[in-house]
Length: 446
Image (cartoon, rainbow, N blue to C red; front, top):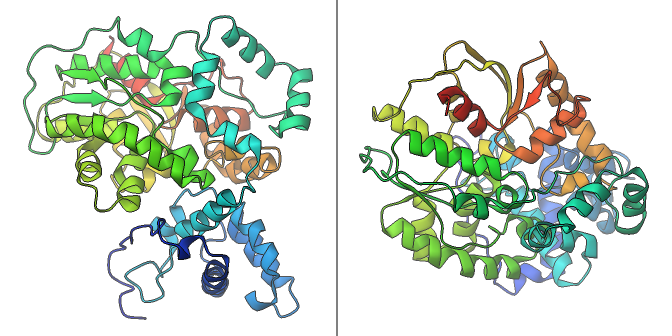
């Protein structure tokens, strides 16, 4: 075994501002090197469709090696990668500090960034990644009803597939007629002083996220209610923009930088005032914990925000370990099929949502740790819909076993995708879709 292979994985900063990062020749040299290592290993074959695509290209080539694959076919692999990071964090034995220095997700990101810089990205993909703009438009009265109706109409969905490439069968999240920010103005925050734990600050600043603000504001209000019930002073971050994850996945790194310049100064102020910063969407939490620090490794404000950032259940379990959690639960939750999203798994905080929900009496949690296949906007697209359903098939089957009372995932979009894969309507009364935060509020009886 090569030296370094038994050491803990580390991650090198993303050298995205260098000239070489955007040069095609060095990119393709590195793609060939890494693809050759992946071909010789094949450990990640079951993770997604990117690796099977690569291995099929190799096996069907004239040499049955990477050197027999046409360079233009590399894009077939790149386009199938949705940057879940699971190959790096859970599978690859050759990540740094191993001398082979394989970082497959960052290599795919580099290729996507070159594609974006050359103007080869589809208008549809730019539109879908503009979550703030779409949300603001879709939250306008009358417009919201129209968009929700269009998204559920067979004729208009067929037209959307033909014109912009959003698959006609993909169940799309509904937009809420009222944003979380409007609702939160009516929510009182806790005024009592909460004790600081050994591991957690005693007050919370909530970064809302586009999805919670525009699609499911109840997740945000439920989180505030849980914090208030635990006498944890909480506030909503005074202003925010999209975290930048959709633009990162697109390779639009300049837009990521612009969004960072809007968010980080605001969030750093909360971090330095002793707040725990929290989001209820794992991708947003990961963006601030990992992706921005890797893009801006010298930025002290970015570091401060990363150090203050918590997943909600990570925070609550740590409060419990400090003896500060309210465990006076009023309502059992029955049987829960719980899916762990990829962007939560790669945060390496453990199964904190499961641990928290299992504290509720007469509650069982069946956990599924596997990619659902949706990944943000990837599974919405016409050309990837079938792949997304194929990847998710084992998840759909495992989540449906024993007919649970609730289907739940920290990623609300993944939960919608899972319900579709299970053949369940989103408003199914037999097996209900509930976010873990909403389940916890139910358990408290508040």
